[in-house]
Length: 202
Image (cartoon, rainbow, N blue to C red):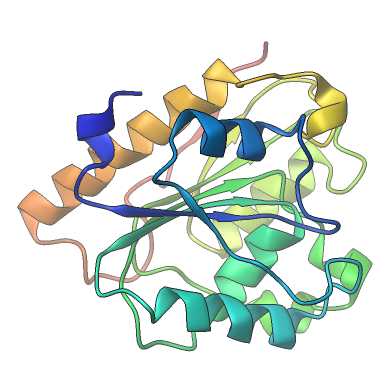
């Protein structure tokens, strides 16, 4: 990923339950790209969708720069729910290993969630928090693209991904889609141009 690819965007890391520790690819990406920011929740051990979403929206409203979100697990659900609160400009969203909304009892709150920007869900073939087929179903509901990253567990620190080059490749692909959407005037349409599902087992 080249710095110039991201120069026009604010990149915001949105972790899930318990935040992302030192070995997590989100944290490693922040170390690799110091300009990346992270949303901080007051209680990382209590994933409350309305509270987390409002906190994310507050952070988004602190800048007028178009924001690219890189979310993981419950952070993906937070991103989708926060998108409906408005008052900020989302440029794109990489939603990695989203937690199953039913496990947290928030499926009704997220069934009509949409992102008015390019977005892609990256799922794992053996994720204990959301099966690959369920992740693909929710991606379709949210009108996001879907990528099968292979058998990577919950795509977290325990997955041993280090800087996760495959994920960086997906981020770069998403940025290219964002740039193409801006050129074609599609940025304000609801739904994502990344509609097709792809399989990239590792």
